Image (cartoon, rainbow, N blue to C red; front, side, top):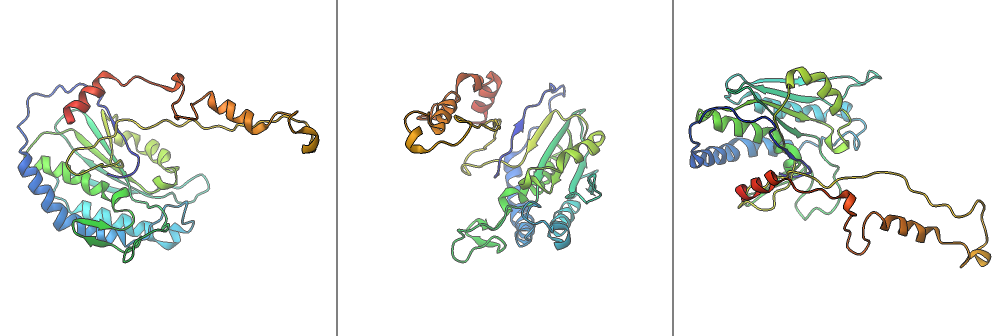
Length: 298
């Protein structure tokens, strides 16, 4: 998984009775075969589509790349043999009557009274520079077991991974919660369209007890990696003024304080400039259940 996503904790206790044991070897075999035979070919096509996020392609609607990516992923998802799977491409307009970037909404019925929301996005970052020889953002290249190209890891795999996981449970008749998969189209632009879709689709989404954002990092392939929190962000504007009018440096140097020095002192009240450690006001204790979960996963 790549990008900056989170795994949100389940807030509702699981009241279900014991379920059949999952056969991990069968899951691994199914996922590996599905990935190699079905997912990789589809993601290869996806990489070749330059569907840049709208912040980097003002004419995204006219160019049609976003719609091509949506059609490709939606077609793959519709073909999965998951009982009760419903898929809809939802399109809203903003206050100006302009079309918002589309979202793919999928609903899969479950055997419990809970809902799991799985999130991802299909828009891409711009080309940028630094590609090795023979590689490029819109040129899918398979080298060994790695597929190179823009968007495969961030975040084209999300829809594929979501449905493959659900299908793996279905094949072994493992009861699962109702699942809602939401794939948006402007995450790399700040997800400015997402709130409107969440509000519009709220009755269909319901109240999830677990939210899985398939847009996080994978340190290696020997362990399961899950991001349970992200570094916080505090935004603001800070200005320092020491004079009401300009003064020649020959008169003011050494007499009037340096605005830059004052600025550094103010910022040092927030974090230590030598270590980057924030003041305690910004610290939180890691919840005990998070520590227990991390140990169990490890």
